[in-house]
Length: 396
Ligand code: SF4
Image (cartoon, rainbow, N blue to C red; front, top):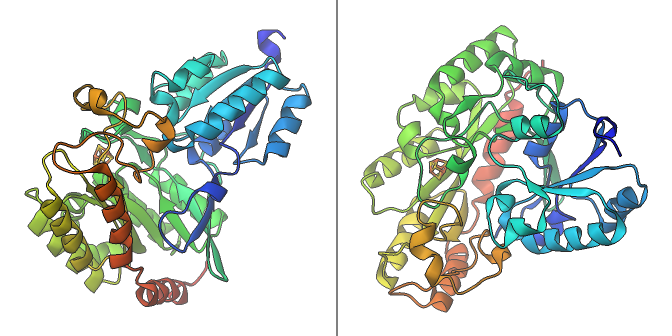
């Protein structure tokens, strides 16, 4: 098929939700925001499948309509993507492109693709499709996360206002995507989108939302101007949250944050404790994320970390083993000690994939599972915050 007749099938891994537990009783089904965003901003004919079944995926391939398949995925879904690539090559002669954090990992992961989307995805894909490059502000897609907590179901909209983070944590792949943070959409766009696409909540999936103080200030003025009162949540760190007036954030719809505490024994410990208390006192929902098994830790340190985490009284918890991923700053330092070679086990945080100098891998993985038993979800507080956030609304 000639270049100007291209028709691209964009897809997420097959039925991801069936293989993700998150360590909580919450069931989640989602879209990959990057794919929703990408297809909103290209002109070439295409179709998007978000976590399709095998039948939906293979039917598309068999239709013979597509010239290229782009699969976006995380490292922990590498096994299913390998199967997708194998099946695709059996059925069709389309070109297969890998994208997302999973595809950043050179050998052995991205060897299976014909090409790999690296860096800023919209720009890479537009060049690859021979389309003129566009600049921000981009078009904003409708993208949802669906949650079921027993019989209670809700839909949360997603928005990314700004991408990237300059902090360069040695285990994180964000800085491989963007060398500096970039604004994708304006605050006015975000608020107009919330007004038009009414959802109970919106989640800002910015890599580090509270980096962008000026954007947030404008977002608050736009909420007043456009009379939008949608509650919102975001990812953030306590050092940045400490630079904000928490009651002012709450007054402007802030009801929850996924905080990357990562570890206690850094200088930020007292800041983390103070900010956490302030967030709790202001009825902000807290999901705390913690990493255990850093190279310098002992078993005793890890016990202390989990105690510290549980005393913070977060509403939900996420624990992960310290695993520097391929291509991150610390990869060269660790790669010869990696003993579990399946890439899908590197990305989920459940597995200790390298030999630690002081700790048995099995002990660490069991301790991580025990940590969830010691930090139960705070159901009553979650229900109260969620209910109050909706009761206060005017739904204009
Ligand atoms: S872990 Fe968080 S703070 Fe660190 S570089 Fe990644 S996004 Fe930034």
